[in-house]
Length: 356
Ligand code: NAI
Ligand code: MG
Image (cartoon, rainbow, N blue to C red; front, top):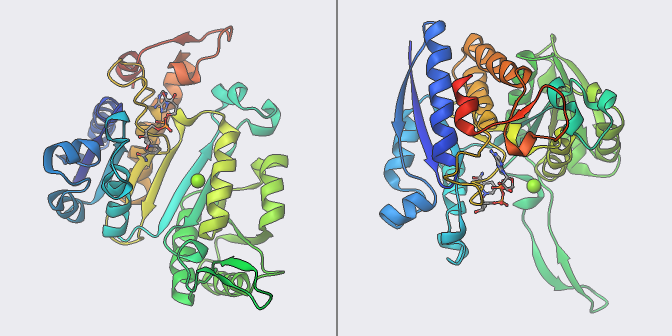
């Protein structure tokens, strides 16, 4: 089958790592009888320079007609002085909104070869493989009413509203249960239902949706406890589903289990229609164009795309094995290299690419 991929290299190291990922994807796919048709489009600073807009209409149109979107990274010094409404980052927000990507999937993986890079003890993090599913377009970041005012005592106040509707909770729950089904079949819903009404509704709806997924084991945890358990016993978790605010915090916390940005992929998806697959890191303008970038987060993003959007887990497995083989061989780009670790050596992006 031919899968249509909208390819968005973006800025900085984006084009370098995208080239590596599409090459690896083509090779892995060919071994499984899968083909990819890549349509490269503009986004971010590159799009501003060429068209004046961070997300040209044509890019969104191509994205909508594709099976999935692969995005590298956007931004750079050159555009840092533009007003925020015209900056490359707007392109990211616009494509997420344009594809209705309400679910953010952030794996936190600690490959055994890199367990030493974590700030936590090796035995604690070795083998960690968590997927955090964060609601991305609702909750307290968007809820009304919000604003500033004055209370009855005459003091200035600021207020925001944490609000979710049943359909909003239901759709993010389904994404999480579906993801759990494709992994370890355990889902932990994180809330604060001992205090917040919005969390009580959240929990009720997650339990109801769970009836459709009897093969997935559902548990619940309060956010404060979850923040602690993520450090105390991260291997407890498989898939975590939570609101926008709690997910923002937990996913940043979880990313530190690995200790390095260069290996973390992510997805922003709608559950129907194309999703956006991208590394967690940015465009690394400090090392752009020098063949120093770590391409593995981009390759792992392509693997996620195969698993979640394209339904070709065999190709995802191949890409993940290739990444493991590169790490087993001791190849390390600067971001994951640690001096004095036996059997490892500092390499360039292109050397890593050649082994994928
Ligand atoms: P960054 O993630 O680009 O870089 C942080 C540090 O990590 C840098 O020292 C960089 O060299 C290093 N690094 C990042 N990815 C790497 C890789 N694959 N291999 C080796 N080293 C890597 O974050 P920073 O510096 O805060 O932002 C730089 C630009 O990226 C800004 O314009 C920012 O707006 C943009 N950005 C874009 C994102 C996206 O496209 N999703 C996300 C975060 C930032
Ligand atoms: Mg954050």
